[in-house]
Image (cartoon, rainbow, N blue to C red; front, side):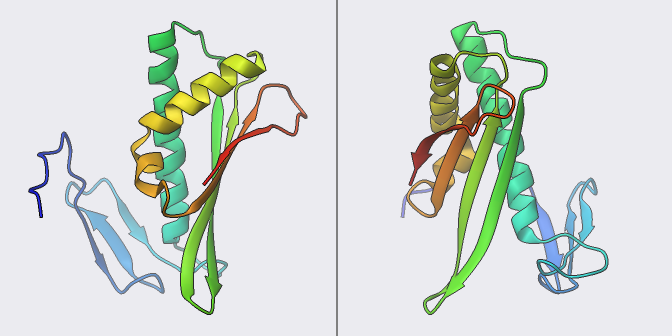
Length: 152
């Protein structure tokens, strides 16, 4: 096995107890959360929510980087909503996801080009490519259904 490259940043998180009442804390203390199973009552978040939060934040940042390279001014109300499903079947559990990108006011072709390039740049998209089903929907007008740009 080839050695891993030295990363620009390493997140370090210690977890005890697992998803049902466990806790996760980062080494710098900035993350300190209780864990729960999906749809549980009470406090805590679940790993699928954490993945959706990280992915949507990273995808939005990737769009900003791509827009800067393309010299495109982004709308102030740009938003990315990530949905991560925990699914199960006879073979076990698996994930699938939908990334919904709102780029109001941009022409469809330009919005699509930004999102396609951001999908190639985003580390979360790279990590999940070919591993889970992903659909990316781009919305440029309020009330619009959106354009599915990719499903893998």
